[in-house]
Each structure stands twice: as C-alpha cells, then as structure tokens.
Amino acid sequence: MNNPKRRRCAIYTRKSTSEGLEQDFNSLDAQRASCEAYIQSQTHEGWMLNPALYDDGGFSGGSMDRPALKALIADIEKGRIDIVVVYKVDRLTRSLTDFARLVELFDAKQVSFVSVTQAFNTTTSMGRLTLNVLLSFAQFEREVTAERIRDKFRASKEKGMWMGGRPPLGYDIKDRHLIINADEVDRVQHIFERYLALGSVSKLEQELKQKNICSKYWITQAGKQTGGNSFSRGALYSLLKNPIYIGKISHKDLIHKGLHDGIIPQPLWDQVQDLLKTNRVKRANATNAKSPSLLTGMLEDLNSNRFKPSHCKKQNRRYRYYVGADITLPAYEIETLVIRELAAFLENQSAIARLFQNDSATDLKTTLAVANTIAGQLKLNPGRSILKSLLNKIVVSSDQLDIHVNLEDLRELIGNDGLEASSAKTVDDEDTHIITVPIHFKRTSHGKRIILGQSKNNTTAKVDPSLLKAIARAHIWFEDLKAGRSYSDIALRDNIDRRHVSRTLRLAFLAPDIVESILNGSTPPNMSVDQLLKLPDFPIDWQGQRKLLHFI
Image (tube, rainbow, N blue to C red; front, top):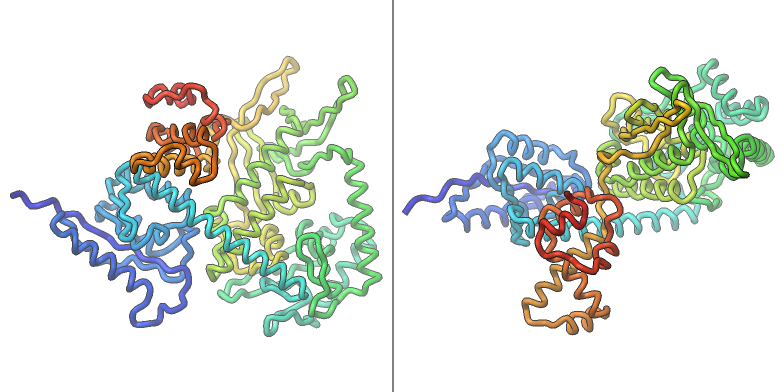
C-alpha cells in the first residue's frame, strides 16, 4: 500500500481580548489542544503538524491586521502549509469580505481549510456557502453587540457622564471625569470671542493660523502623540457647537446636563449659536435651500482648478451643475455618487478597522458602530456641513474620482460620540484616505462632457444579506426534503406560504459561480431576491442560469 501524501497542517488560534491569557492554560492553549488532537486523528491521511505557533491573543476578528494571521498568510504564500486548522470558523475572521479574500488565497495556493468543531471543507462550493452562512451569523452577532454598546453610551450620556476618548480643548481627564485645564481655558474663550468679532469661520481659521493657535496636544494611552495642529474649518465648527463648553453632554440630537463644569458663559454661547445659525441660513439661501450645491469648494480637477456651482432653467425646472475648465458635472449625479461611496466606506467594517485600530476590542466595536451610524445619517439626510467635515477634496479626472477623506476630522466626529478616537492609528502616512471611483463621460453637442455615473468595473462590492439568507434557507429546506419532509410540512413549521418555499428552493440549484458572485457582492446590477423568486421559468442547467441572470 502506498503511503498517503504528507499534508502540513498549521493551527491558527485567536481570542478577542487579552483577559486570561496570563494563565498557564488559557483559551488559545485549549483551541490548540483540540486542533492537535484532530490532526493526530488524521495521521492515516498523511496529516502532520507544523510546529510554528500562529496565536493572536487580544485581537478582534473584525480586522485582518493581526500579527499571527499575517505570518500564517506569508507562510501560505511561500508554500509551507497545506491545511489550515481552526477550532471554530469565527476564530479565523468574523468578516464576510475578509473571509472571501482568505478563501480566494487558499484556493490559489491549493490550501484546505478545516474547522474542528464544524467539519467544513472549503474545497467545495457547498462548503464555502455553508461557511459564509455561518460567518453571516457571526457578523450579525457583532452588529447586535454594537447596538448594545450604542445603548450603553446613550444611557450613560443621559446621566451626563463623559464616555472616554480625547478630551476637548480646555479639559483634561482625571478618574474618567472631565476637569478644566486652566492653561487652555483662555484659548477656548478667545476662539468663541473672535468668531463673534469676525463673523466667519473661514476668517477665524486664517487668523488662528497666523497667530499659531493650535488644537489640543494629546498623548494617547498607547503613547501616540496627536493634535497640536492648525484648526481646520470642520474642527472649528465642531468646537463652536460643542455643548461641553457650557457644562452639557450631547448624544445625537439630544443635550443632557453634564457632570463637569462649563467654560463658556451662557450669554456668549447663545450669541455664537445664533451667529452660526444665521450664517447657515445665508449659505443655504446662496445655493438655494431646496437644492443646495453640497460639494461647492470641494471639487477640483488635476490642476487644482475648482469647479463652480451653476444652474439653468428649462420649462420652470431648475438644473444644477458644477462647471470646471473643460468638464461640466450634473450636480445631482455627482453628489449622489460621492455620498454613496462615502457611506459605503464608513459601512466597510474591514476598511474602518484597518484605518482605526484602537487599543481594545471594545473600542474597535464602538468605532465600527459609530461609523455605521454616520453612514446612515449621510444617506438619510446628507448635509454640506458633515460632507465638509469628512472630505478634504474631490479630484475629478477623465476616468475616475478621487475622494479624499479627512481622517483627522472623522476622528473628531467619532470622538464626539464617545470614542477614544485619538488612539486610532492610520495606515496612510498622511491623515487622508482616498476612495477611487471609476467614472466615464459622454460628449454633448456643445462639446462639454457629462458624468454618467459609476462605471461597470466599479470595485466597491456589497454583499446582499437578503440574497445570502434566501440561499441559506433554500439549502436548509432542500435538506428537509431529502429527510422526508414535504413542502407543506416546511411551510407549516416556518409559518410561511407553501409557494414561497417552492420558489425559494430553486436557489439551492444555483450554479457555483453565481453563488460565489453573490457571496462576493459582485452580482450584476439590480439582481435581488425578488427578481429571482418572481422568475416564471428558472432553468436548472447552469449555463441557462448564467444567460438568464446576465452573467454571460
């Protein structure tokens, strides 16, 4: 009998927090012991243990930036590993997007993936689907945890408590409470008084730069130095509107009495708020309150020439544009595109986790939750002030948009919601993250090019959770049928219509590449659960499915 081919097995373990890792036999040891026992049981198949340790203690599964995981990936790419063994799937990652990347890497390097407690194998499309369904529940658990954290912040702020993060200018932190910093009080009062005198945040920004008056200098718990920079307009707006300076705490649109002392007298605060409101009304009227030009001052071409807002009227209908040197952009289309991409970036948990790697898993979860909340606000009620705070500029070229996100001001927004935003570490050398969006243009009879929107090769992938859930249900129900249950039994048990069961079951026979596209979020435009379930004739042959669903 021929000896089985040797298969080198690497064990990966992870624990979200560092609690308990100092024990002689901790959670990582327990995971490793179970995996070693499983590998030992497969020695007849040629399995052998790789002695290298790939242990990540105190790292969240929501991010790929983990030292042991990076070492594991490096060894896979060098061809040193044949099988990756974990105790549970979510030890590897809790993100569907990150898991899709790992599976792609495993497939490319012909590496198998085994979960000791769940017996999955990613060499089959069914195994990948099952794993992704499992990860969707893990991601759901993370989202529920984030909701609980948001509820905790809300309840604490209602009591006037400071919920951590970088203290605002004029305050320090002692025993988790805000205390007044006597050296910074004059700076805060000067900013409020000069805004009243100048009447403009732009003028105030220039004056503070000339006088070298900077933001708060702060050293995080991790020892990182931050702040001490010139004020941006977004930071000044945040400071002037921050009710902390009159002894109050804000949460969303609500203001609560704080447990700390105020710095700014109430009459001065009221005058500043009235002036901010007046200026906001003037800006709205200047750009038409019903249809403001949200991106004024932010759009520019490759030569740094700014686009100017313009409009025309046809048959009592108003059309808005941004006019550049040789490009005219329809305002609604470009604004919709920018807001959509910015919201998608904030909702991309992997991207946010990479750019804002806080010291603890709890901070990371809260960061993701707040970023998701800001994305929701953007989509529901996009305003010029929040866009101005988040964006440095938007560079328009012949084939793409480069949306420059201001990470420093994003930290300010997140920090105002109670995060330790100052401890965030950015990957980029500068505090800017660039979102690149492919676009294409159309030449009109007047020679001006009009933006049509996102091109077909856009790389922003979004997994449709309803599609994923429907496919998972279809496979569960198919197993029920194989076990002897009828359509009526399933419908009665799950309290749904029998016809819905029969239509959904068709999804259990989707072609593997179609399922893979759904899992990766790369389906054709407008593909949805409703579209699939309402198709009168659904071909069983995979080629027919690809043609019907526009995959070929």
